[in-house]
Length: 634
Image (cartoon, rainbow, N blue to C red; front, side, top):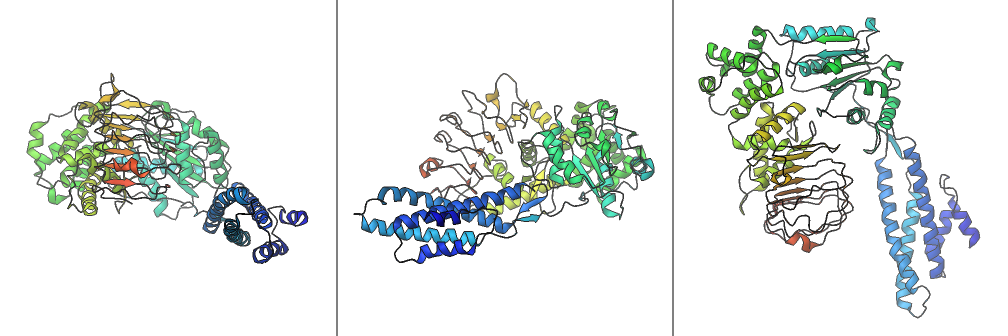
């Protein structure tokens, strides 16, 4: 027997000898095989199978930069994991009965189960895929930006665009970094979108790849989130826990033989860290970087060799853009329209787009004269606060409280992150923004209607961004800060919020004496292993804790004071069990999807009498709560 086992345990990287497979099959079909013999064969066969899997996994890990395990290999690994789980209880039962010959019936039944398991092990040894790695779908050379305003008719914008394009040409080999700088809202992003699309639309071989990154706007932002965005764009496999230097190394490896253009839109600090981590000065393909900023610290970096200032549009350009966006059919008498443009838009494309679209997409005819009479002009915009004051006019023009509340609610999510619309509307319905759900409500139809009527409008007027199918929406950094400004201004209403980003930086839209005043708390992607704590959360309605990989435990009485909580999201956390839910007497939407370590017992959920949405996809939960209130169970 020992000689046979020695033959079985061959190096896993070596193809299994046919004689080994034949030997294992002989144990399956043999008439006089003892229980001990077949049990031993099963475990050594499993040992060989797991060794084979480990070697294959090492092969995958050795080339993870732009390779991915094949679907066949993923399926094979899943089957290996399943058989390993099946063998464990068989081993336990063997210990219990294997040496007690008097339990003949039980021993016979156990032998049959071990025999079947051995068959599965042999099949998996035979069926390990030859090809375990496949190339990623290669990253696109350029990803086209959609819904971009053409700058061809606006000389101020076009001039800056052409200056940048000239600086990027081969004859300007000494210019590796260009900075477009100007005040917020002056059109820098619009120019970058046009620059990106120029390389998409034209068969221009100047760059092998164009990487357009919208930089997060947090004042304390570090290099790591920017590097992670770059890695995601070029489809570099990475772990969220990897430090900046490791991520940068993976990026350099992929881009080593490519001449690329890196666009960093909205940089709020010096680009030196990114530049040095990617070692752009020494890149042998002479790659280049364009940054946009309104911060002197950024555009005065020692690496910036070309500076392009951007001024506001001329009065005629601003008026032309206003008319183009709103459309001639909706344009009021010219004198009134010009006053609106001059008074509220300040010759800034950002404000021109907002004000014009706010009128263009109103359901009833806009009250142009009413707006002029209600508001006084801003003679000068000195900073963000003045800019936000102008934007507030557009916010009020939304009119519909459903749209206003959904806009503010979207600010709970990280800037420029995809918020899937089905999920988002479910949360808004639970909050009561979009109407009540009754016994006769067609929930799916209600959700679709709200996506079309509310979220689509917010996209149309630029408060949100979305794809053509409206499968997701996003809120950019600027509008997120504006939403936070609105929340702070009206902190005593139902939009008081507390947010902590993935670096742990906190922002409150309510008086700082007490976090318990918050109606909405967002710690999406937080890297903290602890939860916000207060003695009383009686006013809390939304608690977003998703994507926190460090969250593994919730205190037993944590939810006891949250009797008004309506939305609870624990998606993608590492919690293993739930605390008492008896305090969540009004909870309507509960998200536990991708909590892969979680175990729940049905009685815990049965107390949630008002639950409408219960998402447990990709968990071990295999029961449907018997609740009359349940409307959506994915």
